[in-house]
Length: 327
Image (tube, rainbow, N blue to C red):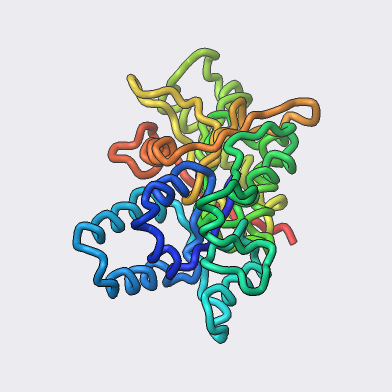
């Protein structure tokens, strides 16, 4: 669903102007994500570009816009590593052995590495590793659902689960547990990633709180009942199924009068978003869910709706944290 590519900053500096159209579309809602490797990748690129007298002030403005709007907004910043090696390519190949890229884009491939692609080849021929699928169908089994997006979860600093029906029923807790396992695994770049859940907890808790079916916005006492009941259930259930030290923040939110309906079933992160069609619940083998990669605009709108907008699209009634204890 996403693929991470490392590009030699020297190669990018040499190619971006003559192949502006290619770079404009290379990482723009394609499922391809640039790896800023090493962490100072952007700084190294600008140092090379600014030292080149062939670039005008207008060229520099175009590059700045290209990076900000099309390439770096959803990129991944990796750590500095293997600084003892002389060339960027040697360092990237060593980093790839530790935590793989989909491909390394360079001017040459002196060691005939299977996952190094020469940029000239990519510009002139079809290269299989450059192909990305934006849509998947998987069985509604927690391991399959979350396994399909592990490349995203393993590279994300912030993760948001959005589903109006998410609750403490097993069909949901299995999915939450799988996400936490993915984040805390040795394959994760950020084992302390921030995890947030946004839900209205529609379903059995609404019935327990005597909220009539078809009611869109509960009253104040009903909202408090939902929050109190859900929090108690979360405290009782989630610590034992979440890896020790992993924290989830649960946010119970409700629609506003005259506002937009809460229908989204989405996992959103700082690098990508995925729509889960019918829901984030694992209904078992034989059932299928459609996963759709969300473009940058859709991700930005969801961010504004739930946690960055002024005002937010929904009323957050309560928030609380749960820390895992599972050994």
